[in-house]
Length: 266
Image (cartoon, rainbow, N blue to C red; front, side, top):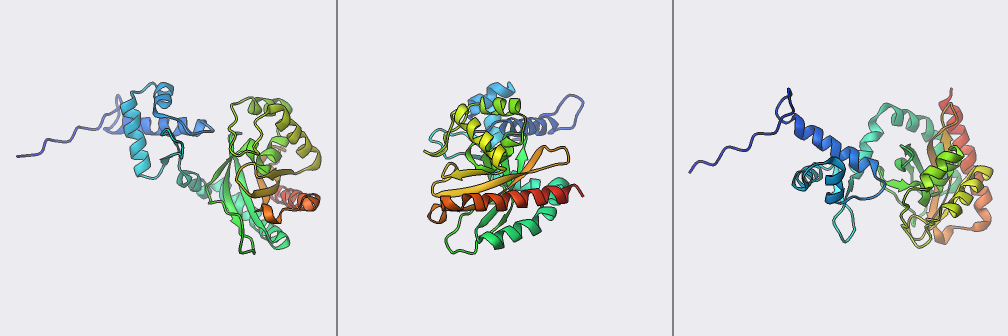
């Protein structure tokens, strides 16, 4: 018995077969990118005005190809994969940032002995890790390249917020904020206080607010206009975190961030 012919790929008006599927897949990626949290199929279906079955099929294809993945939630929700964010490392801006930043990141790593994270700002929504200098210690912190972090949960994010206009910070903190860890603050007033502190000091602190047992001190990198575009952080296990050294570490990351900012403007 001869197998039935496969169903032809849908096509957009005036386009080639498969164009509509591609466009819909890109719309799904855009919708996932616009969220700062995992999203369910039903919500995506409503956002995109597409049948659930179509959205589910597109998500499975994106998952199969490594562009989307399910979260660890009990209820199945979808998010972008680290692979997609890692791809951003190949673009000209990220490559230029890394090239300029790396000598300064290595110097900070040698000085501190701890893990150094360098992240770029993604649409005032989150930070994406594009470079890392590993700690010299056998027990160290680790984040994969392409990992994302919400602005309110990290020292780098708060340092970035400290460089944004006050009204913009209020808008960002008015969004629904996820309590990632017991130490994560989701109170806009408390977070604004932390942002104002970071603005005054030139660096921000994270004490197990994003990951259990991980502390960090970070500062923001700005472009020629003074807008934050990236951040550098010293990250360490809480067993090596010493509150008395925070001003010292803060001065180091602040100096490093300013050196990168200066190098970018040359």
